[in-house]
Image (cartoon, rainbow, N blue to C red; front, side, top):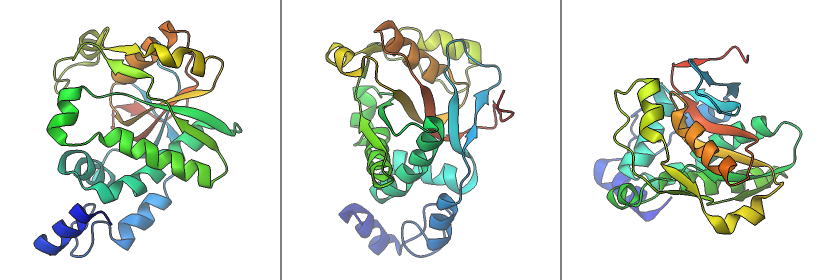
Length: 229
């Protein structure tokens, strides 16, 4: 357990970030829950144009939602490894029979990373890569995208307004263009809501000549169709 999490558990008496039971950062019950998740196709409704097939490991609710927030906003670093396992489950499902892929995380603005004190998605993606490699999948992280225009806060925006808000927000880092050419690429994020962020990130990759195999996320909000169509 990272020193910060051990300190929090010591000072606050220790509570599970998922269910708030007294104890450690992640109790056995919540840890077991994360290992029993079944990935599903999480198409937003409506679908944004250009979004490759998105796969989620869980609905964004209850324990999973609390764990994502605790890691992202409260810097509970010890949660990166179990959440990385959750993301790895979605990636593995998205890959099907393929035995390898580059995982490209959706980037955050530098100011957001500074404010949080860490880059939660990249930390989780690195943990997912390690989990996938333990399963024999040749996974690698590709920091191929950068934020070129910081969008406004997405909270409360409709799907259409989110799409407009994100237009031109990302760009491909040119040094990755040759590396990712003709390679399987999976775009990863923590949560899918309208799919606008993923669609815009995919567009940035594809403009640079990098097609995206699919998207994998930890969780999907209730704004999805699980029909698989």
